[in-house]
Length: 207
View 1 (tube, rainbow, N blue to C red):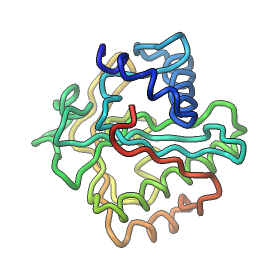
View 2: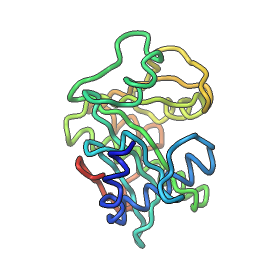
View 3: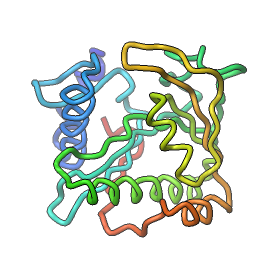
């Protein structure tokens, strides 16, 4: 964590990253009560917010955070592989075309309809990003209620093993397969939404 804190001042000079880290604190610490590090009482960063972390951040017309996700390489330390490998019945999926989705965050300062739109746009952006950058699989760790929603988004998604208790609830590992049929699946499920929010992506060396 010390290395992350050493890099944090530079990361927080970026307005999009600063708004994302603040939103993550409001959601994961203030709302969900996860036991996570807090910087300056305002920003949530952990040991995985290193120079290899990538971020998809959706901003409104005023530059305010509306939704975001962190993407971690699976050939490096990541949450499923390092903290929750027991959620997989077999080997943890890993490789250059597999990325882990973490910290899927929807800003709390939105009406329900705005939050749903931001969620759908973020899911659509994740699919577009994968197709453009040769990502064939996303993995992740999800609380069972959130997993039930993810399974209904319309992309090919399946649990990697059983469900296990954790301090934050009942957790499961998951894998999402991305291919030429993914966007059609999202559209059929009513999840796909054209981007009206601004995508402020940060790839590697961002934090």
